[in-house]
Length: 280
Image 1 (tube, one colour):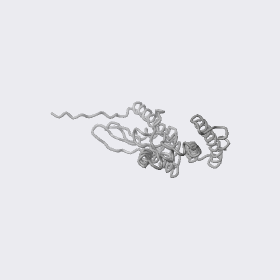
Image 2 (cartoon, one colour):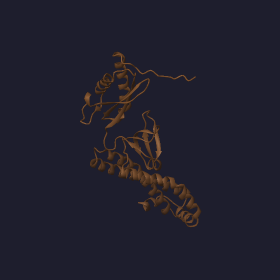
Image 3 (cartoon, one colour):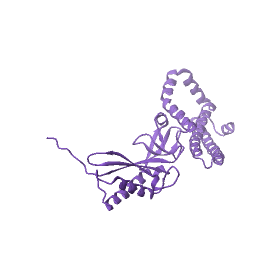
Image 4 (cartoon, one colour):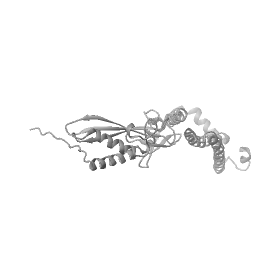
């Protein structure tokens, strides 16, 4: 095919080299699209309902395009006599330049290798809810050759290099089990009836969506509420609530706080009052 193209394009002139390069790149771009389509159709049939398949498919899409373009550029260099001669001079006599290029490409190569490790060992997948720290938290949207894209709850994209995210501790809420234990803290007055407070919290929690217990039921008696501490001005209680959907944990906490507060007001539960000591 390349010889056929050369028969119509003179690769000894600058204009001919340009048209030849564009033609070869277009052919390899088209081949990458066709090959990617065939491979994706095959993998989707094998892994139609698996989230692991989504991660692999997205990574393969990015990898195939990149690989075909690199192969196309190499073929252009080695099939055009003028470019082949220049490339030979550069690579045979420029050891320092090669070292500089290698050092500059170190970050790109480390990101590529880290991306491969993420896809192979699967510490997280596309669609997983992960947390690196308080600022970097959200749902994995894409894993490319260079970086991982996380969509946070403000609908903003966090772009994190693969070499960085692969070396940090990642809290994955959904890798094996989508259930999550939510801690919900409440503060009432020191003279409040603890049994009444516990019952109110349990009742309001059992009415929420996505609330379960170890037996996958939302039973009032299975929602555990413990007294954490009792101070001069308040009693601290914590409700341990299992949710079957980690993405709604924050919304569920807010809804529960509002419902419990309204019940406290309705049933005249003694509220906590800040105590301040005056030192003379």
